[in-house]
Length: 351
Ligand code: TXA
Ligand code: MG
Image (cartoon, rainbow, N blue to C red; front, side, top):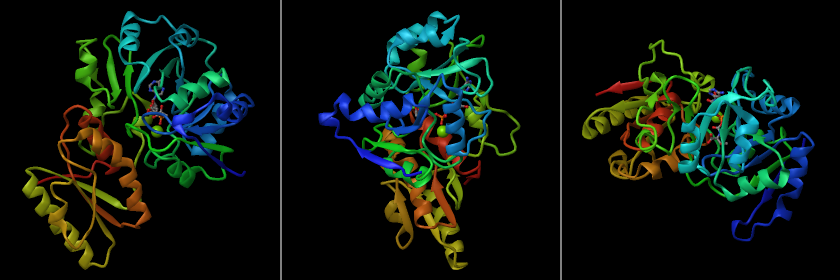
């Protein structure tokens, strides 16, 4: 299959420019499109055949459910039943935006889309291209992150091309995703609201609306041998991982820098290709190495926006070993560390 890249100019976006993509979606085909979080690999959420194509294109296990993207809250009762008051409050506050709600599903949503579950994940993206695509197609669009399963999520059309070229007919190129990390997932089907995946909307933000919200304990998992199982099926898989072996160091910053340098030197001396995941504050301490700064340590949102691109960069440069620093877990920092420790396969060393 030939994959067409369609470049869109955000300043002069028209519905006509999305007609072809919408027609592909209506015909049961897949289209990758930008959202404010990461790029999504879209298909008709109510068409089991389209969902099957999504799993096949990504090489994703079919028990890992997809998020259904909507453009209007009127879609909520169509897709979900027994919708609690808390869902409406969260929707009012955070939609359109980087928040996904888990609700009980209506029969109209096929099990192929929900990975066999009785619940459905729903999100209303704020990205104007995503919103317009949903409207123009007249569909609800099922879309996982548009990466090959296990690889870092895609924050640029070029990343999607790297992973899915030849597997899907079209990629809409809308530039870099503004947030760069996937949405915050909140499960509203249990006794208490629970964050299954941290994202740009932090637990503190959610607490303003739902004071009793909790993290799924798996979110805070740091130990590789911990037997905790994540409630979101997709959070239990090896994910975001670069091909090289990534180790993260935790501790006082000066000790971390020293440990990173020592490990890097050891591997360079063995003839390995080594990369260092650093910050603006520390990058100069690693002179002579392949250093990638993800930004200012105080700027968690900036780090979030650059993280996946940087993880992909390690593959492009062929790193065998990557040594990295830990970051703050304030605000979106919790989501950054969640992705980073998973990318490292829970290889965290305290120094
Ligand atoms: O920001 C995002 O959420 C992006 C953009 C494209 O919207 N999408 C995304 O989709 O990250 P994906 O498929 O890569 O991640 C969806 C996560 C998976 O971990 C999946 O297991 C979980 O959501 N999930 C989906 N439906 C669920 C459900 N009914 N119950 C529990 N977890 C669910
Ligand atoms: Mg994903």
